[in-house]
Length: 116
Figure 1 (cartoon, helix red, strand yellow):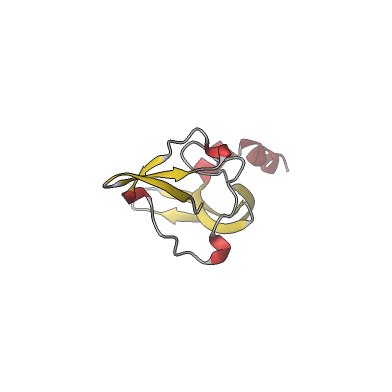
Figure 2 (tube, one colour):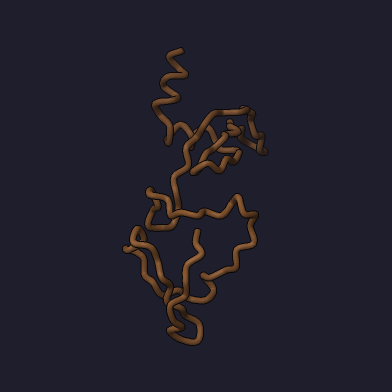
């Protein structure tokens, strides 16, 4: 997210940033440890502030589809896992998620699968 313009240096380790109106709830002074140079590829930089930005600076990703299922075997238990394709404002990513966690988040989808 960003980049944001530095308005002033508040102290030896703090800066006040110029934030867009959509981020009005955020404190505008940041410790230097929170400010980092962006080294990502250009296509990964978010040019606009997402409208569904949460107070903890996260955005809810949408699951597109389940790509694969497998069971992760530990010493004494088995954990059903799902490889899920996510979309977050056009950026797609795959992650392995425990099926139980997915069932809590997407209860309606699991109910449809059980009925089919």
